[in-house]
Length: 84
Image (cartoon, rainbow, N blue to C red; front, side, top):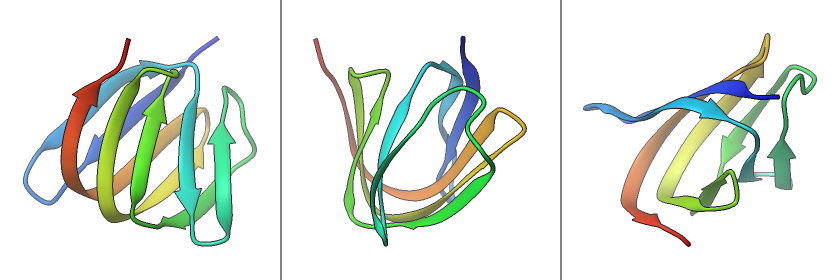
């Protein structure tokens, strides 16, 4: 099972596609979003976003919304790296 994941910064789309999980660091602590998660919204702290256990996006701050099996993240990007 997957959900739609879109990550945007003020200038461009950073990531758009399907994901099975996304791990985030919110202002109230770390959390993971999985398919059909309950609706949620969170402010994001400076951290790394882990997508499907391999893609990492470093952000300085942002906000995440999960609703109707779609995750939208608005973030200020630091760098993108690929894991193995």
